[in-house]
Image 1 (cartoon, rainbow, N blue to C red):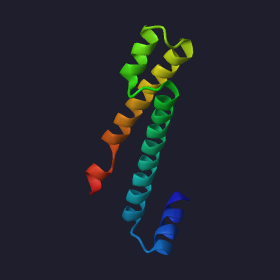
Image 2: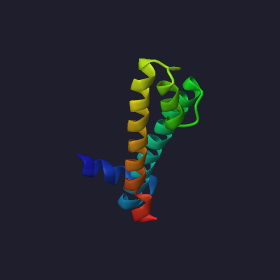
Image 3: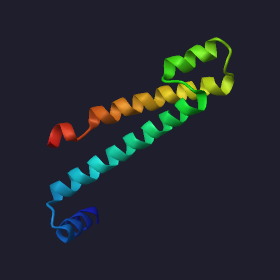
Length: 95
């Protein structure tokens, strides 16, 4: 099923199957990065900080409560996801 779909789409778009796959994967990775950076920006604005360390200091000083601690952990997970996506970026391998 997937092979036929790949062939049909690549034929319709006049791209090689490799070009279609590279473009699709690159687009997916780019979207993941945009979403991750957007989530970080939301946290920066919400807490009025520049980075995770600033938020951690606010928590340590008692300026932010438990929800901020949970979101700090989430921020760290997002940062790790960004690193993974950037390390796995197909641009390194295909361009």
